[in-house]
Length: 285
Image (cartoon, rainbow, N blue to C red; front, side):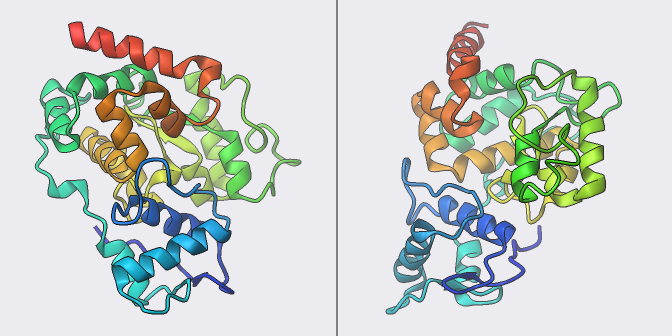
């Protein structure tokens, strides 16, 4: 895969384009040399004091700068080390059937070995996330469109003119058959933001997590979602590059996993309870 890039400088007195900042925040979170469970940055595209402080820590501890400047240039040493310090899960041998239409038991076992967790814990995520197949009746990855993500990624630009696809979090998402209609409307306005505003496939990983999922850009992520191996690759990368998730799935701390995988409102739909119940089902089946 190609190298993850930023378009302009990030940090102190830099352009700090929101997507570039999100990329840097995701990469910083994925670097275990400076990030441990519980101290991840919020990936919100906002260049605040916490992000600047984490950049400086990375520059000092990993890059080896005596006087960290808190600046990441697109072609500079900090960006090169940020990307280079990520260990793709693709380096871990996964047993993947490229013709599979669903995650197989052999895949679950390979994923569990890669993440050092129980296969049943991973099965619980799929059972909780995908009530349907990983693909719809047209062969497309199953998606759920998130209006509030699109609103945030486009700085609320379309909230007034397109409230059906840009605004606050949906109270009701509607039918699965309606999700691609919403996505396509959003794509017509801002393709990159739209693709990042849907959760994809068996594991329902948000497109906005394409960096921690091991993909260089959102287009490669979406291409990967068209196959089961691509979805498996994304999940193993995303969890292994998010310390809180990795710790939670290993210890079966379902409340913590729910919080960082599904969002702060996870209690509204008892997501942690569903994970726990589905883990028990997977364990005994």
